[in-house]
Length: 516
Image 1 (tube, helix red, strand yellow):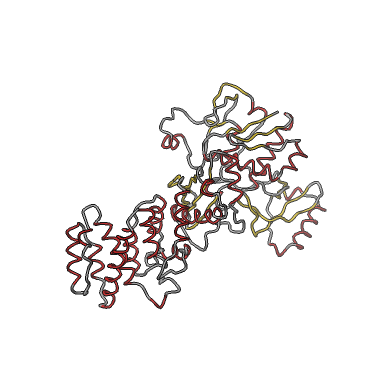
Image 2 (cartoon, rainbow, N blue to C red):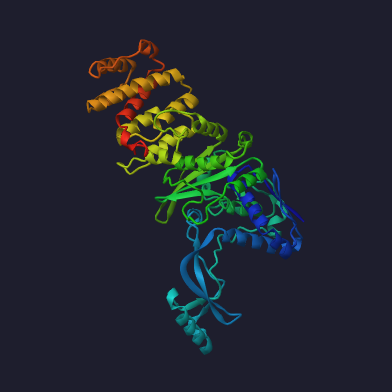
């Protein structure tokens, strides 16, 4: 019998289909031996499985079990259970949901297959129990009135199942794959933790007139939605990212290329020692991680053309989880070309390595005085949207009162390559701003820096430049005031302000450490 998991164009369910395929590939020999399942086929349009009809129920029960096993880890604490078949007590490490899964699956605790009352144990079994406890006293296991008869098992969703009954064709339409079945299940937080409840769903799907319902296949795929995801947890914030391509096999190939870290329960991708809390700053670090993988591929400009990343952030407050924000990023090609230009364009002066050291640069944008990365998050949001960014760097420099390694170089390259400013304009602003900063530092006054930043209109800006010219003994080029016009004065103002503050707070003694 052939069973097809159709692509739905819903990022969460489709990512779950890819996750199920990943499990099947990893256990392919086992499934072939136990259930006579043919090798799975993942294509652009979906996942195809072939098996005998009598194997459907046990096969999908085992697939679901292995899926849930991927959501669980063994803690450093120990318990035990009673193996009734062998009449022996077995030491086992306690198990818990992975930290990111606790944001999706709330209120679930592991349970054994069964329990026996302590008082019902035979005398000989009691003796074995006492000997077992003495032997394993260092593990500090505790004994209650009931003793489990198996390891603790997480059963996340009893109604999520694929079986012969759920596969029977009928008249009920699945809201996601569009096929009709006799039985469907209601959508809940177990399937789609981002959108729990009908009224919340209507917020995202305003044209929806009835409750969403899923077939068994989409239900299982939705349960697997986070199986192949990339996450970071800090200060109760979960940031999760899903890599997605319209071709599901290409999604699988891409995910296989991006290695995950398994020994860090709070982030499964390399954050390069950058501590982040909010969505855009974490997404930016994740994209840097992907770029490192892609740049080894000569064909990367073509291979990223159809890729997109869906990211979302959830906040845990006690036992409650609130999903705050979701973003879809599909401009990988543009961003990676910018990364390439930043990496390859030679430059002189501070940051002479020929490339921005992103870890150092991003860490320096953390405002230690406020113990906050909120401003850095806003900066990363502007970068990822390819928007002007100078006003935020003005704020950063004057609030932090320190310069950042490679900031001078970043501002020049970003404004030229992304914003589209002329290099002659950038160089002119850099020369004037650096001179203002140098002379202001010599006089030990920041007043001129704030005077420039606080200009509200073209007239104020021209007046301020004229007023500071004489006390600082600065001469301007002839074409400066001719170049400044209504349409561009804010660009001139912000660049001169940035380069002046950057020079003012620059400490040559910290040349090698980035003035942080």
